[in-house]
Length: 202
Image (cartoon, rainbow, N blue to C red; front, top):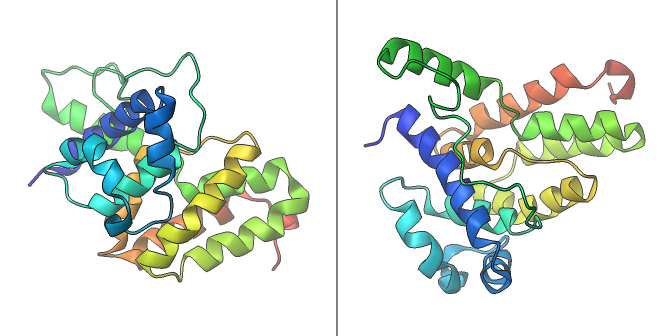
C-alpha cells in the first residue's frame, strides 16, 4: 500500500497527466462528459485513466477529478510538474527526515476546497452567503451526491477566475468514503478561518 507521501506525489502527477491529456480537445471532451457521473457511465474515460489510477484505489475520486480538470481550458504554461515533490521544495533528498517534514508542511499550506470557496467569498462579497451555504451543504452529502454536485461548484469557481488545487481535492475525495466528517470539517474550518465575520451569516 502506498504511503501518504507517495499518494500525494501521485495526486500531483495525476493532475499534471490529466492536464496534458486535456490539450487534445477530443480527449478533454470525453473526460468532461464524465462530470458527476458514476463509474458505470464513464467507459470512454477508461482508456485514459485506468493505468494512471492503478495501485492507488479511489477510482471514482480520480475520475471525478479528471472530469473537473477538463472544465478548465488549457493554458500555455501548464507543465508536467509535481509541486509537492521534494525536488520542487528544494529539499535535501539524502535526508529523509527533512524531506518528509517539509513535504507534509508544504502540502498542509496548500488550499483545500473550503479555502477556495472562502477566496470566492472574499473576492465577491455579495456572494459570500451563498458560498457559506455551499460549504455547509457539501459537508452533509453522501459521496454520490458530492460527486454529482462538485462540477457545478467548480464551474462557478472557474467562471470567477479562481483556481482549485485538484491534487488536494483528489486526496479529500479519496478520504471521503472513510471519514467524510473529517474532510468536511477541514473544509469548514478553512472557510471560516479565511472569511471575515462581516461577510458571514452568523
